[in-house]
Image (cartoon, rainbow, N blue to C red):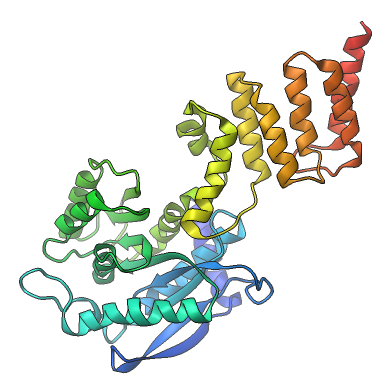
Length: 382
């Protein structure tokens, strides 16, 4: 609860200090100019070789600030990658954009089909051409627009692979469409669905039933999470759930925490070093972002090796550390542990001492390695 309160406070502060670009887009499909709100990462102009995921916020007239504040906050702490956010204002066009459906299949027709083409064939290509975007795109919606973003999920040709559906007012048969799509999907999808026990009754019941059906599916390419909040209304639900949805679609990006360690790393039957390498390859493959391996994650693998007593993996971990942090003591630290845990304490002592010319890393200092070497030397003298 404290984290949520702090995030809400940050959101309101962020409105005052972050720069929002107001733009308009002349759409051939909509036959009109549509107002946009755009937020770029803090150092976008300085990091000219860096690309960013694109987050598309429908109902941008009231949802944009909540999303942009959460993204700025979470990316500041490294929990998610910095991202480009575009909000599409729909204050006078929400029904025409999202709720004009045919009476047979209940898919967009007329103005709602035009809005689909505007997003998929105009807006996204425009940002890909004029901004440094990665292949990873996220769509965020609330109520009618939370239902509408599923049409991008159902269409194989759209590039959106992250979905945050907040209190969706599902159109007829939408749940069946989603279930069938999840069962057959052949690329990675991240989907966050949220409601509340005090939301509109029909919305809460349908989202809950959908989640129960989706959780029975067995498709490793789908990362699905459902959250039912307690005592939140239909209208304050977004501010409480947006950050959770963003964290879910970028879950692989975050540092190895206790949940990931207990649920995955601690249970692996193969090399923990390979697990670490694969994690960062997946970050690039999913999000198109090159991320340096965190010291935190090296230490998580160290913890696993110590707890499982599979000390042989310290050697591979040392090689990886030397490759990623060649000027630091990290590689020497792990190589010293390799020899120390395998009984060659004299060699471990020399390695710890030889690291004195290298740089410290977070949580490990040269003085600590010298202390380890001194303790080994004392043992050798007895």
